[in-house]
Every structure is written in structure tokens, then in C-alpha cells.
Length: 228
Image (cartoon, rainbow, N blue to C red; front, side):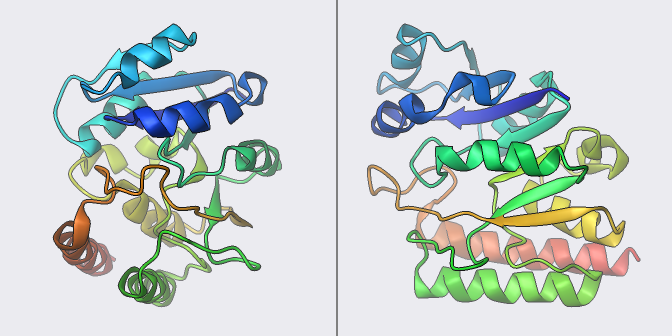
């Protein structure tokens, strides 16, 4: 079983300097970095420190994700945020757990005392409500259906037809379709610390970006429910 750690970057220089040295290369078989044409020295710093960096072909975070999925050589993919939100030391825990035979393992921000320091009261309520709704409508047992930090079998991209919905929020769609198919899913506790630079990134695009993301989730949940 080959493990790919997938890291999308875009102007993450402060984060990568702090976070990347904490990642032990023996934890995974491949560290795949897709850079969205950073202008702050992120790509150069990574290359100087021995990392292979692939330049993103199309604009946007979703485009980076799909380029990463299509490029990854691992049987298991772990998306990782280099801005400080993802705790590196959780990587081997995810790897050990998925090797027990699970289709997907989520590092839950709300399981067994784990917490998100990146949450506002609005996002905390939103995460709770959307996770609860996914559980009710699709038979899930999640505590955190929206978190990006997870390990999953690459084959799910095809078997769940996720590659037919490349404009949707990937982790939400994956959680819904995995629950609908009654796949073997586990969660481990995983804190979400604040971002290193304290600023919004492509994944955290300010209030209006998060509001639009919430509307997008409503759309995804509705479409998936009426597909049943």
C-alpha cells in the first residue's frame, strides 16, 4: 500500500518554513506538492530544501486538488494543509489507521476532545449543522464530515464517480457518497491549530467566501439527496 501526501501551496512561505520540517519523509511514500504559481518564494524554498514541486496548470484550489489526484501515484491519498491547520504528527496515525482496512479515515476536529482553533462561532455552527444533516440524510456517523484532513483510497475517486463532479467541494462530496455506499469509515481526533500567518488562504477566503461555501454545501447536499 503506497501513501501519497498531497500538499497544495500558494504563497505559503511562512507556513512551509514552520510546518514542512516537522514532516518525516519516512511517514509516506510520496510527498506531492502542487504550487499555484506562488510569488513569495514558497516554490523556491521547497525546492532548495529537497522537495519536488509541480507547477499548477489551471487557476483555483479545486484545480490544484484535481491535478494532485491525477498525478498521485499512491493507493492512499492524504490532503495536507501547509498553513498550520494540519498537524504533521497526525500523518502516521492516519496511515496506521487506514492500513487496518478502512476506505477512509478522517482527522476529526470534534472527536474525543479535539478542537479547531481556526473556527469562528459561525463556522463551528455551520460544521456541526452540515455534518448532522449529512448523517441524517445519508446514514453517516461523522463528527466532522467537512474536514479536508483525511486519508482515503484513491480508487474511490473513480468508484464513487467523484471525477464527474470536479467543480464540487471534494471533501463534502466524498463524505456524502462514502456514507451512501456504506463504506468502511473511521475517525481519529485531530486538532486544527490556527494558521501560521493568521491570514486567509485559498481554502479560507474570508467571510463572503465561507458564506458562498455554505451555499455550495447546501446545493451539494440537495442534489445528492434527490439522486437517491
